[in-house]
Image (tube, rainbow, N blue to C red; front, top):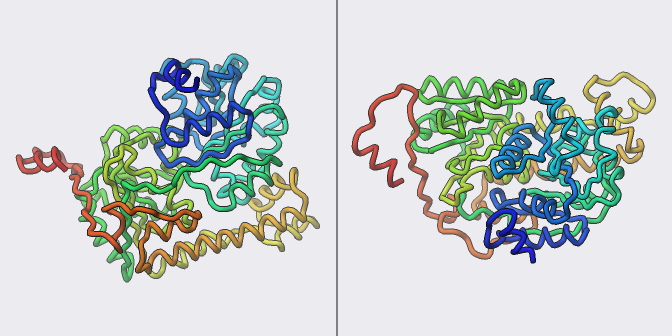
Length: 459
């Protein structure tokens, strides 16, 4: 029956691993957590049940770029009953989508938008059949101290008690199922395929300082193909992009302070190979439907294995050999620790909030939002657990830099997975790695010679 529906609605003959099991679970009205690797067709897991059940689906999505990409993909396949509302739209486009809500099959919104009282009224009367939590790891990674509205998704779910909930992600931290139950008061049927991506090789390099790091990076970029370089801050993003541009490469930057139009332009240029290299903070990646990214470089280590696996998973979605390279110098550990823990909400902050003592505005705002759903006692427990999780992930990443064992196995072990059969191009500790050799175009256009043409054809 499902194969018939798949052929009818999408023209596919068969499912990818994990898709059918997730769809069967959703159709049986089981709240489901689906964990599938990047590029494995997670969107189909809610699109096909929506067509089968003939009820609208609400997709709660973390990023504008992700919404835009999925709306574009649906419309390109002939689906026009789609609504999407976000802050990057002008007023006319926003009003058009609001008016279309009652007639939409697929509705894409952020938790911040939905939880504004005037917006909540727009959807609470809709006959929602399914609520999708896209990139569900964001509930655990962002849901308390970065984007607190994510921790209030239970308010939305409670409005639609008959709707089945489908949480989808490529990287599930060990505590995700616990967080889903705590936030939503529902138990999830977990369907998981391996998070491992065999076609991405793993390499790490240690340097004495940033000068040596840069000295290695610049010439290496000549042959890395389409590349994302992740950095820890906007300042580093700007400075590093300038160095790369001065070295000769067309380079884009991407960070949270760019306008919607600036971000959209950079994404478009990268996707269309107008620029080969993006220097970005972690804001870049989700919703970037570019299958031929060959290299992910972490100029600074990720702050957790979950973030790292999510970010490197943006490479090689075409199945071709790709590489993830992380870089480290001793001062980076202080930088990462500062990013993780300096502005964390503590028990002292919660105590101060409870008695009305002054708090920095950011912390005050977060606690006001969370306290609308969680008690003070719950908040103390939540933030103590958050601190311990961050510490555990941070220590795991610091261990990655001095490994003498398989990097892939080390990462997968954090998620409770073991590697039964390693790929030939596994990691720099247990393989004779062949580096990617895909020439990147310099910003000064010139005719390439016959040898370079052959290299580009056959690499």
